[in-house]
Amino acid sequence: MSAALLTFFALATLATVGALSLILQRHPIHSALSLIVVMVAIAGLYLLMGAEFVAAVQIIVYGGAIMVLFIFVIMLLNAGVEERTDFSKLAKFGGLPLALALTGLLAAAMVRHGSAIPNPDTPGALASTETLSTLLFTTFVYPFELTSFLILVAIMGALVLAQREKN
Amino acid sequence: MAEYGFWILTLIKIVLLLIVVLTANAYLTWFERKVVAHMQTRMGPHRVGPHGLLQPAADGLKFLFKEDVMPDGVDKLVYMLAPFLALTLSLTSLAVIPFGPKPLPFTFFGHQIDLWITNPNIGLLVLFAITALGVYGIALAGWSSNSKYPLLGGLRSSAQMVSYELTLTLSVVGVVLMANSFSLTEIIKQQDSSKYGLLGWNLFGIHSFTQVIGFLCFFIAAVAETNRVPFDLPEAESELVAGFHTEYSSFKFAMFFIAEYTSMITVSCLTTILFFGGWNSPFPASWGFTLYLPSLLLIPFGLWLVYDGIKYETLFGRLVLPVVGAALAAIGLALILFPGANEFIQAPFWFLSKVFFFLFFYVWVRGTLPRFRYDQLMNIGWKLLLPVSIVNVIITAAVVLLRATP
Image (cartoon, rainbow over all chains, first blue to last red):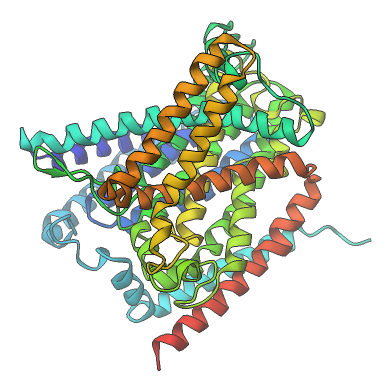
């Protein structure tokens, strides 16, 4: 087994364990911490694919900024241990089949297009920040700008909601 | 053997860097106390060892032997995790700092010995990623302590660090645009000073565009990120006892302390690399005599130590200080006699001198400025620094574009 494969399995295990722990933990802070572990493990997987820039951004944006806000809100609201409720009907009967279906779908996609997935030897467009940004501003410029617009709308929505009522 | 040589070499380098940095940390506390004391016309520590030089060792031992108290009702796992997180993250960031351009003149089982642990293409982003995670140490410490003051300190610090991270990241975009790379060594190479001396640094930017504004925004934001005066609201002792580390004692408290000082070192290194030419000398290459500056500084300092040591009050001081002084003077003399060694240490010498200056600056600021109020802190971050750094990015981008298209 090569070092890259070993690293992959270590990171994949870490991500899976983190994700499981995210669901099973009773306390919101512990769940949030598990999510951070997942984010960092996924960043490691990106790094393994040769996507250095995406890996760093994954940690900066998701591992850093977004999760800090999560933790901040949990701390601010002083959220306590959550109570377990009975499983919802949908989760009870639909959960397992749906999860299996999703796994099957992903596995099928991976088997069919596995060779196209970037890896350290053929990182493709992910290799350098330059090619990535060129792609973003040429081929994918409309989706990119639309996403930015969506985020702008979300920010304005938050501002409107957070505005104090004027008497 | 050659296959494992790389791993062994890296391990050795990591251990060496850790030893150096932790010692530097310890002496940074001594330095800070001494400088602040002299600014306030006091003596500072001077009982333990000559000029208080053994004070850090005494403090370290004291930390180890203090009782490790864990308050009731803490979240044990997170409470233990927080100081480890703070310390490991701040130490990890040093791994990507390059200290000099040339590898050592010998190899280790065929592997070149560079003056850095690793030099990734995205060095700058790695540092930002680590900074982004760094807030957890403080936030979680505040939350898990099950106490009101730490909680408030943790909340303050997460709000503060998230706010200033924007400025921190935006203020270096100008530098990245000019260097066209996230690699720290590339950024230093772009600030070549062999022709124009210190005018080549990004601060003055004769190669493309001055980054004075970027530097000011970066340094202010960086001081805020490291929770130092005047932005040390997370540990404002007049309001929050000691903020996020109120409930920590013994070595766990020391870990936060070491983490803070290590971040200071990292920020000083980063400021040096991004805006002050890294290891580039401030003088043009044609000024050959500046090569002897390290010696010219070391010899008088060594001789002064000998002079000071001979008339020192304690016997220990009379023994140690002259010996250290003589050793320093001898090193300075040796550098003049061996031009090869003198040339090799130029880059690390300038790099470390600049880092030392910024560490002094940190202490200087601490001895000078009062703490900001919380609303002032938020106003400065969002209404002043952020717009200014955005304008800086736009102007720099325009200049880089104009220069690229003749």
